[in-house]
Image (cartoon, rainbow, N blue to C red; front, top):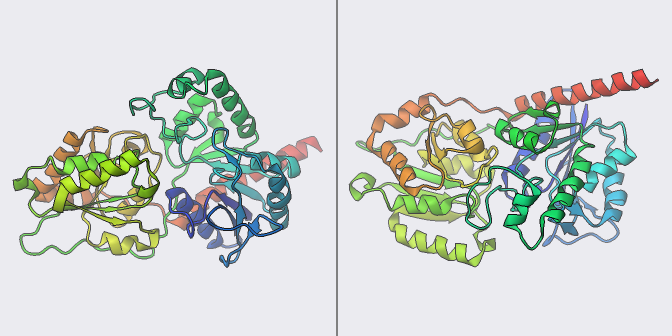
Length: 425
């Protein structure tokens, strides 16, 4: 079995859960007998383009290639540089000769890549992993209203035009129809959460073409529980992820200041994350002001990479996921569980699906710093609570087991192709 995994970014250049998930799948397939995975990741500025070709290696590992792409229409998820898709992307697919092509995203690459494969290799099965609601929602795929920041319960051209009145409902209708023409050419969709599948089925994807499969983790090194000094408490919280408003870091910073001093004591929250400098200036100012207000209770350490997680986690007791959007399957949830750390998360979307309230973590009402402060207080005031939650944690799926589950999907699609071919012979 030879698989081509296509990603919107390479973990060497782009920090994100989707990049890590796609690369873990690539490694997992290569670790299995009689299997071979090739990895093609999009790259763009500040990386310079090679002359004469958009393909480049930049000394990546064996079976890894980069595709430079930067002429992208974010509204239609479309690559305007059709010539490079037909020339470089298709040439690479022809050279690899995969049995299956698996897109872990087409952000930056364009949905035209799906059509190009169907055009040039009509019998080649195409699989797409859905990571967020970008095809449904133009607002960064978050399904959050642009006006009030409230959660969006449904998608329609009319609803979308209310968030973007300068675009209009007609353009959103054309966007939806445009994207669905490419989605019709996909053989199967995979999602790491059932919640996301339900959203896309409501949008129009056939349920029979969707499967929930968890992303796999590389679990080579795990951090033991933090040693407690005599009389010590499990009072070290942490946030891991992008520093954006959608991730709810402002909610967590607000909550920190609401816990009474006698309860907080010497507790702390460590923030690990990047891309603050790319956020709107008003959010950057708010984040910095909230950090100053939190004082010694909060510490900001900047960006990190997945291989650093065991080192960072060794000084942490509880992980907080305060996102204000639905989320799908944040990789930090799996990473925290792998290291035996309970979580406190918003009570919506994939977060509520992955974290069992009162079993291996705690939920708080999304967007409520008061409720989050109460959950943190619960951990701080009840010493036995942390151990109770930790004892119920289930070990997350390893990358090789995840690859095996994906191979079952691939083989099923190849079997369907053989049956159809025989029937038409």
